[in-house]
Amino acid sequence: MSALLPVAILLSSLIPAGVTFFLAQESHRLRNTLCLGGAAVKLALIVVMLVAVGQGAEYEARLSLAPGLFLLLRIDALSLLFMSLSAVLWLLTTIYAIGYFGSKPDLSRFFGFFSLCVAATTGLAMAGSLITFFIFFELLTLSTWPLVVHKQDAKSLAAGRSYLAFALPGSAVLLVAIVWLESATGPVEFARPPDLSVLPEASLRWIFALFIAGLGVKAALVPLHGWLPGAMAAPAPVSALLHAVAVVKAGAFGIVRVVYDVFGITTVQELGMGTPLAVLASVTILWGSLRALQQDEIKKRLAFSTVSQVSYIVLGAALAGPYATIGGLAHLVHQGLMKITLFFCAGIYDERAGVKRIEGLNGMGARMPVTSVCFSLGALGMIGLPPMAGFVSKVYLGIGALQADAPWVLAVLAGSTLLNAAYFLPLLYRLWFLPAADDAAGDERAPMLVWPAAVTALASLAVGVFAASVLSPLGWATLIVMREYLP
Image (cartoon, rainbow, N blue to C red; front, side, top):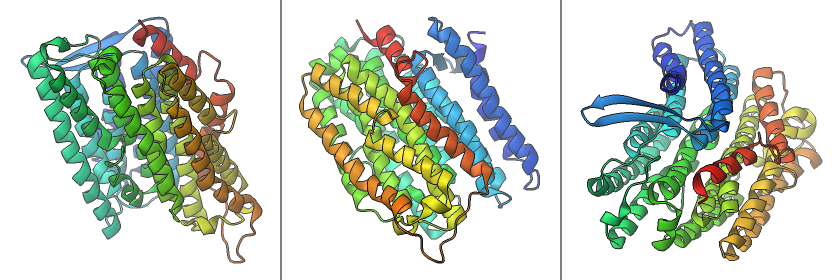
């Protein structure tokens, strides 16, 4: 069972993906059943493993690819944190996507790549070695590109070219870092940190920088973030997946692995690389918020918000203290819940009211109250209003900054909070306090669109209200740090 469960979790996405590609357009019921069934099976398996891993169990499978080359799938507490987010949001996003697309064409192709994208994310979360991580990192790029260009219009194709223009060089840089490191240390497994003493400090600094650059493309660190706003040309379910579950989280998760499981906190500090990484994350946090202020399209404002918010995870890893790490890891889940809520709602405004730009939100609170309440909860969480999830993340990051003797980070968090308020509160004002135009449309007679947003909005509130629970993302992040990263 220890080896079978990781493989079963991977197959729960791969099988629906493989079958869906070959289904005819009119087989939408079978396609939907496969996708929803796979998501339900994955979620059930993860619930089983959460109980076992919480008690100290670990799962590992080694699949031989070639002599001396293994696909290593390993499930520990950190893997489960990311996989749990992926599994829950995959199920909800699948429901949302079924309601969003209805009977539009090319859905077998879309849902095939959609499931393949989740399989890549799951494999990346379970990766127990650098080579395994890289394989799934590349599969994620290959499976998300068709989703970005799904509409096949000029704007989508340009967004796809931009995505590859950033992603492929980033992958090449990441591969150079892996080859350089493993040529000296041998294959690197996350459960067995490599002996870095065989390399001079100058080489280690360069390798670390290459890792951050390669992973920073998907994490949308400045100045490697340029592909992300353009990717908003994709349909709303794809935007939700990219921002809350898959690509940007893969980059941030990879940076956490590199800092803690490849180099180790002590080595990163001795090399003097922690502070530069924290500065880079802080610049990204503030720059993303400043750029969000300048956007008139709802999805683009949310995209630059993602650039900012995902870097909280990187900041927590860079500061390296217990509280900062807990805050960063918890934010991996918190941001996912809040951001997918916002993108779900943006898609509903677009589909049900034809609203794409911010000025179109006027009066939507009265016309679409459930969607607008959900959007408001997500936005207030991003600002960091207590007791929302974002507030919990920022408090832990602030305490962690003081622990790490980096009080300047408090100014970054305060500035980010003010900027979050500056680009979200005007939207809420338009929703609830300005009258709608006489010809404004809008209705919520689309339960498969509205209810996934309601679930994630309530979840983003619940994980803040019940943050003290051992079952909360914060409680699980605390378990990870206490078990794996504290001496």
